[in-house]
Amino acid sequence: MPEGIGTDVSDAADVSDAVHEPAASGDPGSVGQQGTAAPTAGGETIPRQRRPLLDAVHPVRAVTAFHRRHHPVTLVAIAATTLAYAALAYHRRWIADDGMIAVRTVRQILAGHGPVYSPYERAETDTSTLWTLLLTIGGGVTGVDVARVAVLTGLLCAVGGVVSALFATARLHARLSAKPRRPLLPAGALLLLGVSPFWDFATSGLETGLEILWLGLCWLALVAWCAETPDTKRQYLVALLIGLAPLVRPEFALMEAVFAVAAWLLIRPGKRRTLLLFVTAQAFPLITEIFRAGYYGELVPLPALAKSADGSQWNRGWRYVEETLKGYFVWIPLAILLAAAIAHLMNKSALKSRTTTILLATPVTAGLLLGLYVVKVGGDFMHARMVLPVLFLLVLPVLVVPVTAVLVPAVTATAVWAAYCGSTYSVHFYDQKHAIAEDERVGYQQWTGRPNPETSAAYTNRERGIGEAIASWTAHGQHVLTSEGGIDVPLDPSLPFPFAVAAGRLGAAGAETPLRDEVVDTLGLANPLGAHLTVTTPGRPGHEKELPWAWILADYGDPAVVDTQEVLKGVSPQQVAAARHAMGCGALKELLDSTRQPMTFGRFWSNLAGAASRTALVVPADPFAAEKKFCR
Image (cartoon, rainbow, N blue to C red):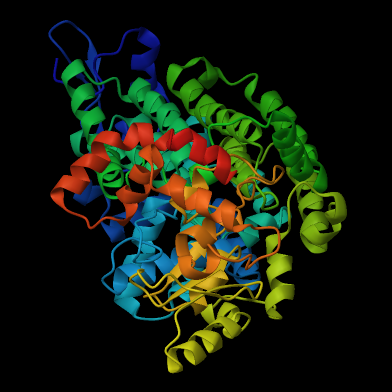
């Protein structure tokens, strides 16, 4: 039996899925459109191959197929939902300080300094490798402010993901219905219009829009390709798409596993094809991981270490999720849609088929698994951000639903909820004084004084004091270690750059600091030493490892000054000396060497070989304890 055609099916129900499930009218790639199936010598029925990929995606044929496959009401509903979401997201466009971190990395790449935050040390500050790549391409091609590129790219990704998911769900309901061209109305998609963080993080300069795009495309691939016997080329494209998961975000490797298992169960390739598909899926992540380990000396981006992503904060994580669910009354539409969907599907014979069961279960399983991870790690410091892909996954099967006596009341009730929540905005939905996370958009609106802080200028204007001070010191030939708080100390003259800026608001400080100079991250997102510290200020993920000033002075301050006098209240010269001694000993010295020594083949191999142990390294925040640990 030929491999890769979906023929190694184990039971009669599977054959029924491929041949007897209703095909969408006019679908050029469906079994029903291609004619009868061909019998094998053993009497087994094999669906015929789909049309070649290039033929199937011909733009004219694609438009015709959409028109034939979907009822006009469905097309209007999808268009109206998409346009409303795009308009709301554009109206709320902005870039967060964390988004500005990726902007500086991209600027360094475009300047020829490589994927670093500061040229002095190789630190991977961006959680999403694929997002950094997209911004680098966009910034290089357009030549405009990378912050604006980030905002618009995020918006385009989010809208593209929503469109893909809507058409995929419409295709799913065509499979479930005896009348595949029946009208559909937006249902779960109304969450995108009712929960304002969906609008906020469509831009924000972060990778949330890319997450929505990847989820939407994977959902479309399962419903439109894998469930309809894809040809060989499409199988490899699906594997390549699903394999991008950890490049979107590291924890999306969980989603990769769920979608990959679902795709395999739908396609049922042979052993050889399974191996080839697995290699295809893992090719880019493996290449990226080898580069990361050899170039940065770590197995994960620094934010994963700074946020203790392998730790557990179950109580805080549940409060984080609960804040979103209660704040926007999300439990109301979820309960309504779940009850209505169960009632609608109870009498559907299609539920007895393996294919439709897999399709319905996959996004729900993925959503619950991702939600469990969010709760485990304690959520995030940004309000609702980590919950958005979870909600999106949970409602994928009911983004749009058929017009029936059961579902229309559910859609109506959900629309009322969306109108209420969407018209009042997030600021009224939770007690910000006692909130577990912050409304970052409101905070940066107030900090920058702009309703839409969407450019680098919005941040450089607030941090222009850094640039002015650097210009003044340059004119006087001075080399200085400075900070957002106004601490100015002579810089170690042995360092290869003239200025170092210590900052907690890393994106804003990085926007104003020249690319040649060092930005000392006090929270560990761009500081290899800080990322490996023990927790100093527990409470907020990503802000629990505040780098003590003894380490900063030991690393960047002029020894002739910081070793002889107390330049900062509470930081003694003895603490500074202990920190400097610890940095010259054992595993801690190797950690710093892995990021600061020139990149050679030998250094790359040494980084690669020691990446696992280096990633697991824990540095005591107290300089004396660190000295005792590493210099004994």
